[in-house]
Structures are given as C-alpha cells and as structure tokens.
Length: 128
DNA sequence: CCCGTGACTCTAC
DNA sequence: CGTAGAGCCACGG
Image 1 (tube, chains in turn blue, cyan, red):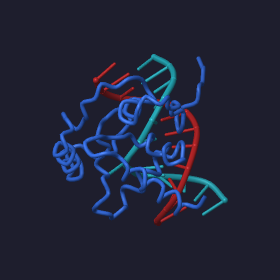
Image 2: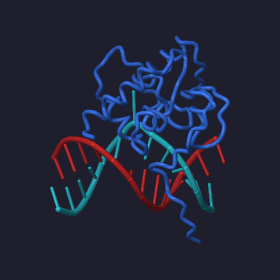
Image 3: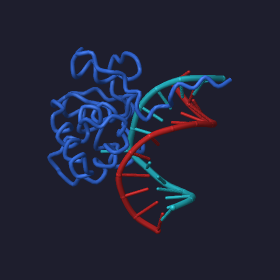
C-alpha cells in the first residue's frame, strides 16, 4: 500500500480511540495493519493538522507523553487528557499496566488476546 | 545514493 | 527506576 493509504488508516484508528481512553503508538500502528510502524504513527500525528483528531490520546508504550516534557504540546496533551478524566501525573498516564507489548492495549481495547508488539523492537539477541 | 533525525520500542545492565 | 545500545521506518539534505 502507498503511504497515503497508510496515513489514512492510522488517522482512522486514532479517531476510533474512545474519549477518556488512551493507546500506544505501537498499538495504533498494529490496529492500522502496519505492525512495526509506530514511528510512522508519530510522524503522521506530528503533521496532521486536523483539529478534530484526538492525537492527545496516543502515548508512548510506557504511558508517558511522547512530546518534550514541559513543551507547549506536552502541556496541552496533559491538559486535554485530564479534561477527559484521564489521570496524568508528571506527564505520565496512571494506568495499571501489564507486561511489555500490551500495557495499554489489553486494558483499553479489551482482553481479545493481542499479539505482542515484537515490531521495531530489538530482536532476540543472545550475545554475551 | 548515503546520512542524519525523530511525537518509537524493546532488551540488557 | 535509569541509562545505553540496537533495530526499524519514512523523510529531507
């Protein structure tokens, strides 16, 4: 698929995030059928330009806001989340996270056995 | 065409 | 919990 289609898919997934809930970049990418493109998601959000897009509901895999701490975007994202009832402490969303690969997704999108990220990640190396 | 950059992620220490 | 190292992707110089 071309980049344009991928972008649309990503935007669609982001728009589908329910109010008051959040999702990780990797999770969004996966749900958009683009495993391993978490970075692409970030790129799309950085230059979207759509005011109605709930970009603030997308966080890093560890629940932290991806933007530069203290920056305007950072503050705005935290504020928007709190406005939706999401607990944000020191740029981090309070969530009882499970293990890697499904910290945010499993809890937010349901227990429907999501496959572990394993994308863009360091592949199993055993060195030393 | 090579190289640096970044709203990313994961494994090791 | 924090840092360092290593993949991966799309883009711009």
